[in-house]
Amino acid sequence: MDRRQHRSAGRTVVAVGIMLSLGAGATGCSGFGAAAEDVKGGGDPVAVLRRAADTLRGAGSSKATTSMEMATGGTRVTIRGKGVYDYRHRLGRLTVVLPEDPAGTSEHQPITELLAPGALFMKNRGAGVPADKWVRVDTATLSDGNLVTGGATDPYVAAEVLRGTRRAAYVGRTEVGGAAVRHFQGTADLRSAARQAATENREPLAAAAKGFATAEVPFDVYLDDEGRVRKLRQRFSFVNGLQKTPVAVASTTLLYDFGAPAGVRLPRPADIYAGRIAENGNGTGRSGAGRSGAD
Image (cartoon, rainbow, N blue to C red; front, top):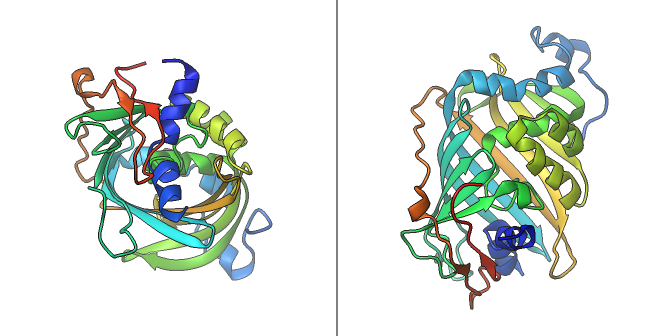
């Protein structure tokens, strides 16, 4: 399969193919006054946030819930996910639930997603893919670097985006899920993040920097006193290639139960669909090809 076919496969995945069919910052580099004192030795907010991905890796693993809201043409839809993530091996497993139809019923089974360095695997993808098969997508070929396509942002990649933090301000202390946290607001640059990311995430983030309407990513992030991300909300913007309309996406990731078991087993090559992803009558996917085997 050539690179153009990879991109075609990526565009048929979840958020762009399904979501569109269903629907269709702070300034300064640090806090000040009492807020600055409450950073509790964390140092300059920009430096603190650029270390967030390394801190997660040191934490080992956690449970995660995700929410992705997409707004286009006056319609807003939300995809939700829940699962576990192994930060040391950069492997995750999420069960992604697609939006209900206007009548209040779900037209799609939950999609199981496996997140791996450089790859996204999906089961119950639909669009002609057998129920017992996985679809594999090379994330480096996706124009959004899989920050949006899968309907859930990879938690480690989301933290890697913070490596590109250009501006950040400390807002204050609050709680997330019963944990005391420090709230920061800021803007990250995807091009800068790509240069500093782990090797396997450089290409996907560089692709996102080119594929989104802007490489600037506004965010709100909440860190516990150990510097671990507890909540991260990032806002992306891209242009719908079919209708040429702007699409706003807000991705929220919640991390909790650090140290929870997170064993993730990737599919065998024989279990990966090698056929063509069919055109779907309800608009849940455009024609594309599955990806078989490892790169």
